[in-house]
Image (cartoon, rainbow, N blue to C red; front, side, top):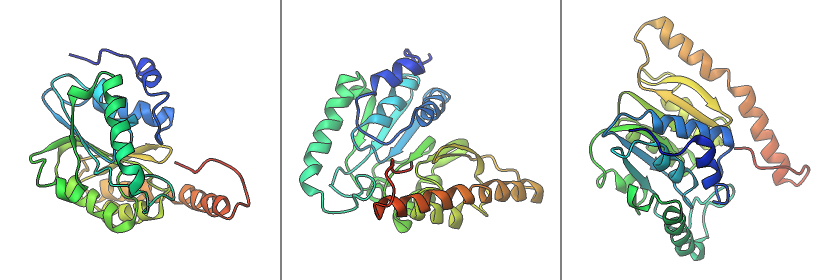
Length: 241
């Protein structure tokens, strides 16, 4: 059974939901969820107020389990919002819950209100589609990509937000995936990268995989430079994502 709403209808559904997701990234999430095998599992790390969660839950077959992992603890809320937002935590959780209900997907989503590391003991078993949009610092990002990436079954999909945009996420990718032997770099929608657990074992396959990822570094340098200029208030513009 396929999704009951089209991509356009789904994007209209989340138009007023706060979050960092471009139309192209929404389409990437939609197609990934739509192609998740029947009776499969989608895991999202970092839900914020539910924008991406709603897209995943709307697009996936009703037999697919949707797991949203977010502690709503007031940290790592978004660009330049790493710590000190405890007062907003309760509001984030309430808005997240209300947004899912308004979109009609509340009963579809299993929300695990834990940090992603702790959630490893709560959510057991394999994952078919993994969307990583948690803490963007190097250590937590590496831990998510490594530990949760190991849960992705052969042929499964891993999507990572703020790749080649966030320094921490990019360093984590370079550390674990650049020379990795399992995940093939498929492409990206702005900073949302797509990896598939089907990398060939030949030296040529792995060399191509390295080259395709290294080719993104000029775009990464541009994003970092833009962030510096925005932070110094030398230019006006949207935070790149």
